[in-house]
Image (tube, rainbow over the protein chains, first blue to last red):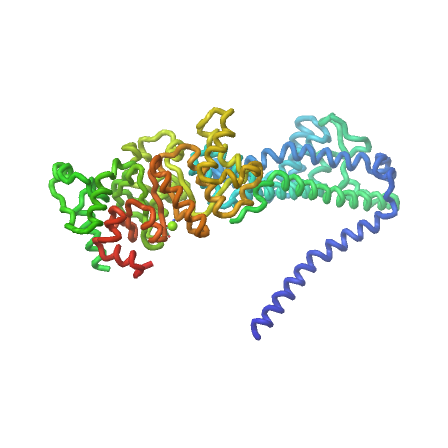
Length: 281
Length: 309
Ligand SMILES: Nc1ncnc2c1ncn2[C@@H]1O[C@H](COP(=O)(O)OP(=O)(O)O)[C@@H](O)[C@H]1O
Ligand SMILES: [Mg+2]
């Protein structure tokens, strides 16, 4: 009897916790979609912003560009760092790296943005630019990618790791062909989350990427770039309903990109790990 | 308990290293070398003759352990092991749970080095070469001393790649011949017919027994001289167990086999020699026949008759 009551209490608590997480999420999503529903049109997607009106072409292409830059820079560094921490974590250098990464993870993103501003935008004279923005985002998410990669590798069953070693495979081969395929789904999840976090950031971009009404080009420095969060962040404070519409549309577009990103991540990790789907620990 | 300790003292003082664990067939050689020798007990049974025969053809020792001590951190797990594993024979390592069988086995291919706090003293010799001191390429040691684990652990690669990866890493055959060699290895363990149409598929779709055979093929592919097995059939069904046992017996002609087993019957079925481990010490080591018919130690007897773990 007591166990039954305990059970009921437990499950109620789980239910409340779940509701606390899920309901606000649904509320936000529904709210944004409802608010922006009226303004969905091809023009929205395919014309650039002009003043507080126009479309979002410059913003969403800019966001994609920043995401691509981020992926190119942060993924290799973060994943390699995570592999290093997981496989050679007892070395002195690894301990220094871990300490640095943990410290960096605690630095507020606006400060990261400010430091990049001082160094790259001002000192190197890049002015507001895609590359400066990309670097700010990269520095922000690298600790996260390193940590999730390390955790993913540590979760690979010892049994498999030792199988490679016992066969006399070089450590690099064991890592590449045995550990990474097993860890890949979790590494991918980490990357997707990192991209999602970065995609939703405004603070580190305002002083680094700036803002631009025109489309991004191959010019990575000396030229500012637009991005969706800027529209959400600044236009919502403008006293024009058109600006509000654009802000909500930008938020909706961010959600869509987020879903695409998650879907893409799933697809890639499913393909990349097609051999370990039925692994029994 | 007191008795056990006494026996161990007896073992460590009276027996000389050279004569452990298997009495030499030629007693005179032994006599000349270290003077004192306890004559084998007179047994007038058929088994005695078998023992004699087994000793006569016991051959050279492939792996020899001399006063091997293993610690994890502060805790000593193996307290001075002396043992020999004879070439082209199956030696079963038996003993109650926690006596150090797995630890001993994993020390033989330096796999324990991956464990933090692992510390080893004494000698582990492969063909007279100390694998902890005389070796530059630890990977080649691990190739020469292969290992099959308690649970099948195929790599997350295609079935074919599971075999091919070792072939390429150790340059066993020229690249162009890898595919044929994969077929040869899979055929050898009797898996070819079952997997030939799904070589590019995941190994995790295979049954547990098939996965274990794949792992055996993977190990054999790199031409090991010794194979270590840690309760290789404990997670398998009887039919797969039978297959693995048959294979091991067939493999004897090429490799030395050291097998940890929980299963005394299995040791009786396929092993030539038995090393009985108890609380991190070798209590008794002899031919399987001799151990089963004529265990010299009460602890061994208790274990074999199931009065202990
Ligand atoms: N990595 C380790 N670290 C510390 N102690 C260990 C480790 N592995 C095994 N041991 C200890 O060594 C003893 C022998 O273990 P093991 O070799 O697994 O025994 P067996 O295989 O005979 O059952 C046990 O008491 C176990 O707790
Ligand atoms: Mg064990």
